[in-house]
Length: 341
Image 1 (cartoon, rainbow, N blue to C red):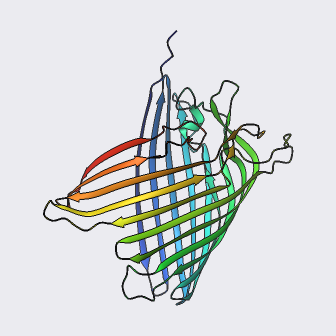
Image 2 (cartoon, one colour):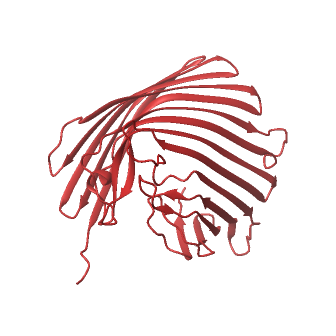
Image 3 (cartoon, rainbow, N blue to C red):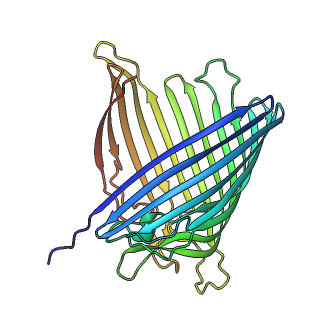
């Protein structure tokens, strides 16, 4: 018996118009973003129109201080096979932020705000036989805050020397968080977590010790927990969220070769590590940790044709995507781009 086929067709169009006015220490701006999405999965046709008006205000009370606020409203009209409500989801969002430049090299930043994430058309109606939709999904809302430190070494006159370091801590309290779980048939389907709390920290650092050498590294720590009061499971880890993700990149800028027309050539290698994660609310299915090694060579020919060759997962390690589906092993990719200025 042959396997049943499935056809998916999707389109997205987005545009934005805005205006900004600046005075001595003030900046006021506003705009409207309009987007249209269409998704067709076999016989199911769905559409969404999203209107997002927004306004922002920036005030600099002193040279070292910057205060920012943003307010927006989101109107989502979603229809499946012509059935749906105009502005079926109408939600306000807002954010307030402050930054203080203590020294030319040190800046402290913080933000607090409310956000909303409306389920995508794929989450509502599915995208493939292994990724089922859930038309009963509610919109995810949350209060989030973060605080961070930015360090830039500007003590060297030559721009290629110096280091940078960004360290952030954040917390998010979500209602109706959208997460994924496996069904008894092996497919993936989204569901709402009544309430959730996520604590985390991010680190990004890098250095360019030589004009031809760039080093970068990053790490993210997460503690994602299901805090629903009537939860019946002992496990409270949210599915498909690794508690550690880290990467490191070494990029070498190669000398130009005008005799053959090569310029802006770079050779880079990257290592990515992702810790293990649970794949179901009960925590019984565990996706093992994974570490991959990539390499890429890019060059410009005649300054307007860009050629790239990349080797992905060179060690042929087992790897999985964000929702636990297996990814290909070792692979080679090539690309050609043309840019006209």
